[in-house]
Amino acid sequence: MSETKKDTSIKFVQCVASCSIALNLFLALNLYLGSSGKVINNQLSWSRLAAEEAELAASMDCSGHGRAYLDGFPIDGKPVCECNLCYGGPDCSEFSPDCPANASG
Image 1 (cartoon, rainbow, N blue to C red):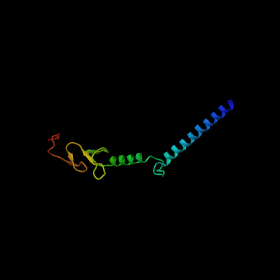
Image 2 (tube, rainbow, N blue to C red):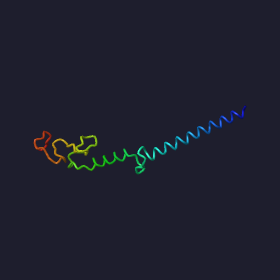
Image 3 (cartoon, helix red, strand yellow):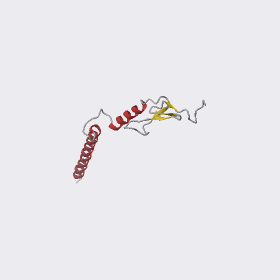
Image 4 (spheres, rainbow, N blue to C red):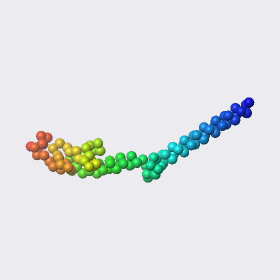
């Protein structure tokens, strides 16, 4: 009877090992191939897209009188400059002479 218990425990260990290998293989393939079935430069596609958007916002020229933010109001899918007080225009280069924060006059 002890031989039967030994056979049962060996079969159990073999079953657990087989399931573990199959699960690891499935997860590894899913990680590297993704749901689309192709490798994307060994990167996550969402992180690459986020980096591209951040670079686009950082490269915006706001004349030193504003900034472009990723969470701002995009126009045509691109971030726009959010100007400091007393400045306006698409690149924040237009000074408003009647601004209440004008220190010179």
